[in-house]
Amino acid sequence: MRRLAVLRELPDRRASAGPTGLARLGVGAAAIVEVSEVMPLLHRLHDPSLVTAPRIAGLPTLPAAGVGLFLGIWVLAALAFCVGWNTRPAGTVLSGLLIYTLALDHQLYTNHLYLMALLTVLLTLADSGAAVSVDSRRKGRPLTIPAWPVVLIRLQVSIVYLFAAVAKLNVMYLSGLVLRYQLRLPGLDSIPPALFALAAIGSVLTELFLGLAFWNRRLRPVACVVGVGFHLTILITMRVMPDLLTFALLMGSAYLSFFSSISSAPVRQPASRGRLEATPEGAAG
Amino acid sequence: MLTKPGTYPFGWQMFSDLAGNRFEVLTSDGNARTIDLAEHAVRQRDDVDYGPYLADHLCRIVPDASEVVASNLLAETAQRFPCAG
Image 1 (cartoon, one colour):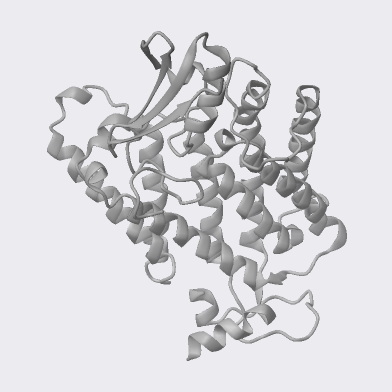
Image 2 (tube, one colour):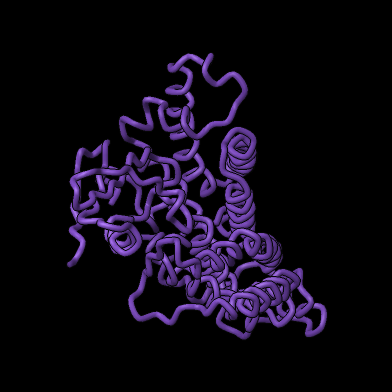
């Protein structure tokens, strides 16, 4: 019942702005890095010898001559979002470009691009430019922001890990074959198959742990260490770079939402510049 | 989508399965040629159902193409896409 009351009051609750500002910085940086991956793909869409797979019929395609302009706006919007200059307009433009890219062709989809779009939308709605930003230096923004987008970012972290874990509960993955195929380690052929199966089970358990542990205040620091270690291991051992680097940067940024204190009671009055009173529940989030 | 084999977009199913897709183009003289997807795709992704798009493309660019067959070796399924005309 108390949890339901918390949900009802969520639209009125406020969260501390600092961690969300840092998360915005990470997501903006990831969006800048992403340009290097998207640029050749947008050009390849205009190569008549290659197959296109439009996601939405009738969606206007990006003309070949417009790719440079499109990516130029992307970089400027991502840069402005990253440093927190006109954060909301920059975030809105960047969100639009990311969603358009996802809608353009099935082959442009990646899980990290989708995650980037979701986080950019949520950080824009969260007024993430209220801290660690040019906007906050120029305008003296409030130190608290709406709590509900912060909670949605937390939920997104859990959704990513739990879905990833459940999807791996199949014979092919648990046998270790998928890892055997995806890993790039020296002497791969000399590693016994049983070790790949053990690693597969370990990765599922790690993802299940990460999907749940961030919600527990005592386990949160452990989850951070495990999460960073998990993504570093992926970066070192797997074939697909720089996608995984962007993904790690996005997830690391999203972790920060768990360190934003949420007010224990609704704040009805207009946001003041006063500091948020963190409560045990707020800190536990 | 979690209960089906293969991977799907928007499902956070990163590296959860192997794709096992194979594409063949059949020509009017009865020959079959296996297609290397890397030569035709903007980017190879396991979560893209290339069948219908690749069929349109191959029917257009391969002389004498009569049919494109998209098989999934793991799910043991095959889809046939006859070339129009």
